[in-house]
Amino acid sequence: MKVVCLCIVLIAFAIQVNGQGAGHLTPENHPAMSVSFCTKSGCSAQQRSVTLDSNWRWLHANSGATNCYTGNTWDTSLCPDPVTCSKSCVLDGADYSGTYGINTGGNSLSLKFVTHGPYSVNIGSRVYLMSSDPTKYEMFKLLNREFTFDVDVSQLPCGLNGALYFVEMPEDGGRSAYPLNTAGANYGTGYCDAQCPRDMKFINGEANLIDWTPSPNDPNSGTGKYGTCCTEMDIWEANSISSAYTAHPCSVAGQLRCSGVACGDGTDRYNGVCDKDGCDFNSYRMGNKTFFGPRWSGVDTTKKVTVVTQFATNDGTDNGQLAQISRFYVQNGRMIPNSLSVVGGVTPTRNITDNMCVQSKKAFGDYNDFTSKGGLVQTGKALARGMVLVMSLWDDYTAHMLWLDSAYPADKSPSTPGVGRGTCSTSSGVPADVERDSPNATVSFSNIRFGPIGSTTR
Image 1 (cartoon, rainbow, N blue to C red):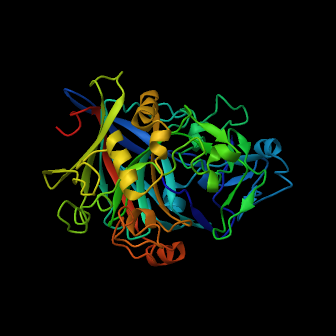
Image 2 (cartoon, one colour):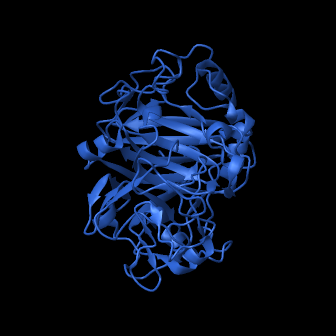
């Protein structure tokens, strides 16, 4: 995802928190949902479940209910240093529906934006798909495969992002590699992405409290010394106005705890280990301004749509190199090809390829960090190793989601190639406004299918 910025407004002691031991004041019961795994001969539904990211969970003393983290500051008596904090504090189980607005049924998952729980007001959420083993995430090896799902973004206005994507986080949440992390995947630990987020309160089993700086505009967030980096494949970032899919390669394999230049912050954005910009295909940005939106000519966002993404290799085998990421849709029984790019200097295409990325970066005047970080070949290596499925709903305290659905950078003319990304106003997406005006906004993901190319839409 472009930006990771999430918030929970406190009413009592249940807050957005993170830790590496497991508490037991609230039982942890993963919401169940089915996922279909396909072959050339058909698809088979298998029972799976989701778990809430550890950054949302209540973090408290292992000997009681005292908060280890309140607002955007640490309790220094419980957390004087990273190791002591990890030993002193535990993550607790989640009331998925009542506190977080997360509900499942059959093959469907719904995420509500604002939920008024018994102890807190929760904003957004992020969940991971678990395997049949409750201590491990489901690992998807996407190379030479396709991934398909149904989604309803009809209730998502400007400034919101209902996202489905993959990251190369550890299968067990880092539990086996880092002894201080005894909670593991069961409690949603181990997150990483190509933004190398420094707002994660625990990384590699240790509290990220060194040089912790509270956010100036998010009362529940801050940044520490370390970030957590890994390759990211954004299958779907969207609201009812705009959508994009984006590949973000990293020069490292697996998850890395970064510091300094490696995190790629500020003026070091292109000196870090990950391509934070990525190579994206947003139909509006690529020149077709009537393809995606409410009752528009291609995908009508007032209705549910099936999204199909294919990861083709150069030789058509599982051992080949990633050569193309293709997209098409199915809606109302009609197959809808992805929009064709209409940008000067870019060979018309419906897909992400290395050539498309080079040409679009040049046409938009963007620095080409995608090629510098290895492009599709490097992205494909992560897809072959295996990645974790993430589904989330969030608003953006940093850039107000303008990079997805408006003109960005906001100080440039929307007519400049690459600046216009959607029809939302540059004044939209302010979190306080979105949280006040659209608390009931909900995204639903359903009917997830995975298998060889051509197997999931028969």
